[in-house]
Image (cartoon, rainbow, N blue to C red; front, side, top):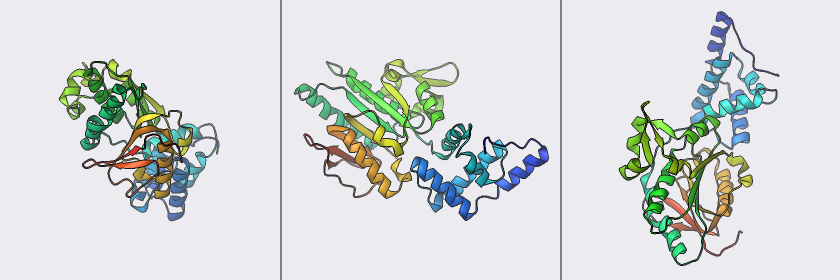
Length: 305
C-alpha cells in the first residue's frame, strides 16, 4: 500500500468508526505488539492491550481506515510510512511528566552527586564539565529540572562550573515542546521557589518559559533506546533514567543498562526510578545507599568489562 486511504463520505466514515471501535483480534494484537517491540523495544503486556488498541483505533478514525492490518501494512512501506509511524509512536508513548518528579532522586543529585564532582574539581582530579543525560525526557521537564538545579549550585560557587544536560526521547512532538521551553502557568508551582524565581519567567499569554541561561545549557535529540549503541555522547557524569525501563522486557532493560554504564565516566552516577530493575548488578557499578532512591556509581579507575 503506497499511501494511507481516506474515506470521504459521511456514511463511509461512520462505518470506519464503527469497525475501528471493535478492537483487535488476538492475531492483529500480536502483530501490532510485535511491531512496536521490534521498532522501539517497548513491551506491550496484556494489561496494556486496551491502551494500545484505543490509540490505534483513534488514529485509524482520524485517517479513515477500518482494517487494523491494512493500517499496519501501511506503516511498512510507501512515502507516508515514516511520517505516519512518527505520529503513531507519539500517541503510543506515555508523556506524563512533571518538574522535580520524585524529589529523593533530585536530592541525591544535589546532596551527593554534585558535591562529589566539585570535590574532584577542587582536588584537581579532573577538569571536565558536568554533563548529564535525561533519558526519555518527554516534553523536557526532567531535563530542565536537572539544569536548574545545576545552574543554582554552579552560581553559588566561587568559581562556577560548566555543565550541560542532554534530553532524549523517541517522540518528535514532545521534543519540539522541550526545545521551546514554554509551559502552562499552572505547572510553575511544580518548580521549587529557589529555582522558579531565578530560572522561570511568566509570559503575557498565560504561560511561563525557562530562561535562556538554562535553555542555553540544555539540548534535546531524538534517540531510540533500541539504537543506544550509537548514542554519540560519552564520559557522562550523570545518567538520569526514570520510568522508561518499565516498558521494556527484563532482558532488554539489562542490555540498555549495560550500554549506559559504558557512557559514564569512572565515578559517574546512574539514577533510576525505584523498582525499575530489582537486584540489578554490574561488575563496574556499586549500589548507592540513599533513602527512597535506586542509584549506582561507576567504580573509579575501572575499564569496560
